[in-house]
Image (cartoon, rainbow, N blue to C red; front, side):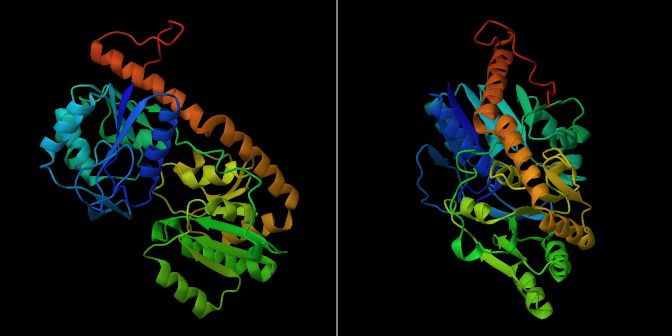
Length: 392
């Protein structure tokens, strides 16, 4: 098939949705499909194979974070030219209700449209007030997907007629796997706790540092490694300096090819987010690397891990519970081993990109059949499942 993948987010800025799109594109190409990625970019002359830049971006506060999106509604002619030239069989829009590129694509697309909803939040005023308009765009989607049950329930709260099939984010199990060489100067007698992500309030980093401060007093041979950049960095540095919190390493932004080595250096992966997470790709990367997970009990995370099986879970906003979990895991290497072994099996069986892509291809075929008004059949002639019915 000829497939267009549309992201509303700045292609030049790393993020969960863009990462999803880029991995999916590579997997689809490996299967022989012709794939083009469409997205705005803050870099005017960004050049990438199989990528079309559509406009610049502006930063907009969204869901306790910042979304770098294109708000220009005058890209219609460029989008029409691209769609006419590429003649896509399927257009897969990620966050189809995020302005403005998905709206433009849906307005002019005459092919099968699939929308994946990635986000989760307690409420969304934009969805609430724009329901009449967004409902019009919803009718132009032949199939809908959500990356987790919380993401599905979030969109259904505002649009009860839609029932997306749940197909999770994927993980590159060849890139994130046991056996990478560790960062030598960080691999010693200490039990290393690792955080990877954007340094912002909703990620719960101050809770994590406060929890580590308590845990380190009880288990001195521990270390906290924080990988990432973000607006909370200065406040984090101030807290660590003022409190003289020992054994905290702020590694900053790490190149993608080096990141698996940090997982190989760690003994436990920590995800202390306070909410607004629909899934948690970082959990999959840790599990695929055979790391036990210590995470908060928020809906997005609990859709990925099973407490006591591949993770220890704690209440959000609770440095005391985080500290307790750290101490338990620091003192029990057998528990760490058991959780890590379970996690790597789960990651490979349920979340490896070939598994996820196969399910999405079924949805693409169903979307094409809906456009034609006929049932989709798989390669053996059986009718493909209804893409609007959750199988998650």
